[in-house]
Image (cartoon, rainbow, N blue to C red; front, side):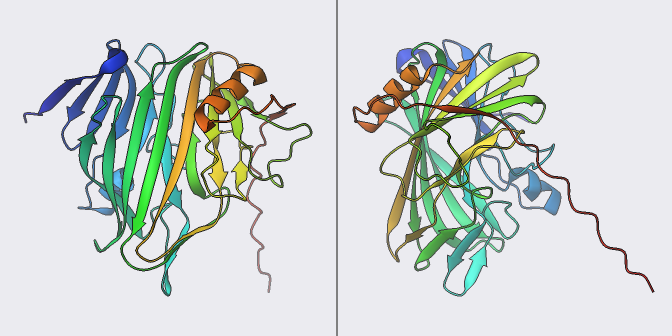
Length: 315
């Protein structure tokens, strides 16, 4: 079977290679930096389990191994850089666009940016039967990294509703634009950094940024999530799980005929978390502000509590 490969040269040492119907590779100076997984196959429950949502894999500096999660392992619906809500309500019906139980995210086509810095994936959010509820322009921009980052990835999702007012809901564990580290990571070393003294991510709101450090294959990686100030307010940060899924969630509403935009920039580092000064400088540049460097809190990740034993009925 022949696979059509399209190669497009970009600025700043980037190239794109499109394997039609499967994935789009982003190469930096000839090395694989990221891979946007866009296959869709609803011919069986097993196929839709593997392809029900597009996502962006991020690779190590050598371009050989993904440092993000894909299908398989624990919580296989957590995949790379992804977006979704556990409870999307339109009218009197609700849909799960997190675990993808009764809805799919279907990539339709790519649009290359005219400034040659990235691409946009046009995505339909559909019911299991194929009715389109939302359309999304999921854009990725790949920026020339400044040390200590080896990758700087900005993602902007512009989501429009076609079927009336859409309520985006769920909870911090199951909604929003998030990052998931590879399932093979060494969970004992996972920790998070927060831009506040005595931070409590379960009660605090609207962090400008948050960071994750984890170990994979004996190597340390750090990822910083920069939360653009235009994003929905009253956001709760889910950044405490030892398997390295983290991001921000705020309940929001897209009015009938309207749209919402979600914008996040990721700094990816091979090594230890950079200083708060370095992170704050990157955030200020992204957000267009001049905020001072905050005091920070570093916390070891929490292990998820084991399920409670089922009660056994006795006669």
